[in-house]
Length: 202
Image (tube, rainbow, N blue to C red; front, side, top):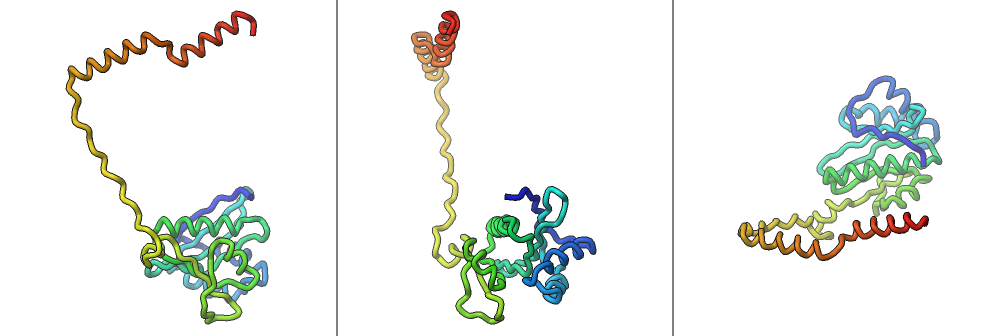
């Protein structure tokens, strides 16, 4: 797996990032220049992720937005066949879970449907924008909202023990010290055995 650094989610963009993201996204027939420009036009309403490889080159890019606890991935592009797209998607999913997002949805081209299914996405029963395939993933927060997952367990409150009487504590310490003096600690025994073996030349 390639070593990459994933930056995001961020909101700042500039012309340099635009050119690099456009070149990456439109390097295949999957994303057209028209689609990229439309997605980029709404970038101020969305957050972006960038993945940079060891050479400092842009290896993946994504635009996402969250509305009413639903995250929509409007654009994701990566260098093919290097596992970078998967790393990017896992990061986006991880961030969505942390933000208590209930569902992620996206529109996939046919060649990428299997990729998203392996990540856990499912196809919507009704498809509105062929040839793209609309897909979704229900996250733990969404399952809990629908009553399909147990609620998050609250941490059990720690019950403080009552203070021990000082005289009793002294007796316990004395008893412990007496027991320790009757038996050799394990570490000391191990050291003794090692010294003995060393003295024999082993």
